[in-house]
Length: 214
Image (cartoon, rainbow, N blue to C red; front, top):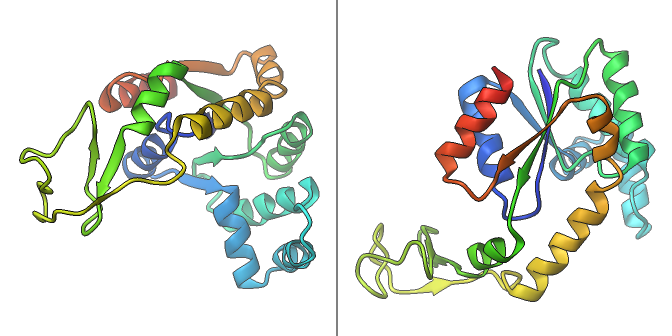
């Protein structure tokens, strides 16, 4: 099974992808990770990408498509795949059709985690972690049991990501809408788009995704 998982930063895509990997044995193909791995491994496409990046230019659709092709070729034919961060444009969506077709694969589902922008802003801007062990907390939803002390390691220092602020989150949302707007109609025409409430409890989101895939 081959699926695309869509959703703005903070919608929980990573969490759900990890569950699918753990529970269904699927492989998550993240374009950013694959690009770095291909460059490090000095594959033919990786060498091309390295030259482009060292010149300070954006990696072309052709190179990204090549890297996805390489990654799929390295997998067992029956391995299920989650595409993360690709496709981002209509051109990439059509390119993915060719990549899959050449390998006897088809795209089965496009699942979008639907979010409420204001609620997502609250979810992200309230996040903080223990500076020692990385345990996660939230201003509203998950305060440490003892104020100022980590539940896990009992450390007293906490930190927040500098980009977890309202302006950045709303900019990311706008970018996401602009990028996904061109590709959703392509898949909606094929009847393979499903939407899940990304603001629901993590387990409920996982159950909704399972119901789509089963």
